[in-house]
Image 1: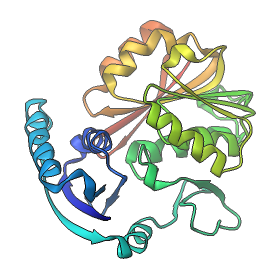
Image 2: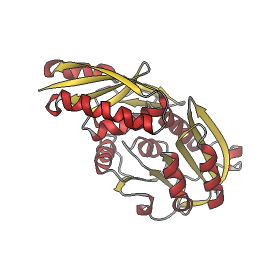
Image 3: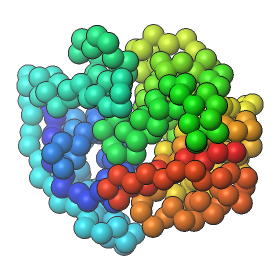
Image 4: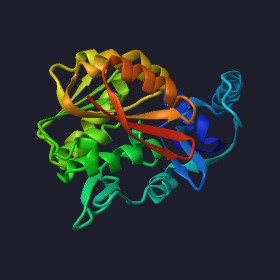
Length: 290
């Protein structure tokens, strides 16, 4: 058995859609490397079929109005070279003040909060700008330092909800940053399986991962993270707000610049006040308080 490594040059606007598409095609994982998206497929899927499906998807991207489209080439990797090639692409990543994302084969970093994420499961390895921003904000608010965004009070850390959990990386970070009960939900059963495996890999017993949307999340929470597309954030706004404790925070990410106005308007109408915005390239993250 061998593998194909696709090197895809893609604009930041289309990255998320392409990652989701390649995962649906059966990729073994993907990573952003020097401005390119590297995606890996087992050769049993057939190179003609893979090339044809990606070429067709390029037209879908263009019709959706995402600028730039994408181009790609590929190389074949023998099974003998696979493990070493794969591992070289995934090195530990430091972010925030104390967090480090590491794959399972790396030694944990002393003095850091290690988030062990298997990149072979895809669904978010922490390298995307929106995930990085969410992790930094969770760490900031979980630090216990009173600030203007939490009304000068240290944050309660009884319950954390991650909507669209993907690999479970935000839920895992929340647990390791001191939240006592953590829940992640995702509508994709493959993502749920990946997240549950990553939770076990990190040895956590206070994190639950459920298949379904926000409606599967019972109770209310002190902090909610929702790294989702803008149209999904808008559609779920009332359900998200209903699950926030008074004074609690929502970190909403996944919006492309220019889309945040509609999301802010919908969240505000549902009962949230926007209190901070962050831009990372074309991506926007908004912090709301109930």
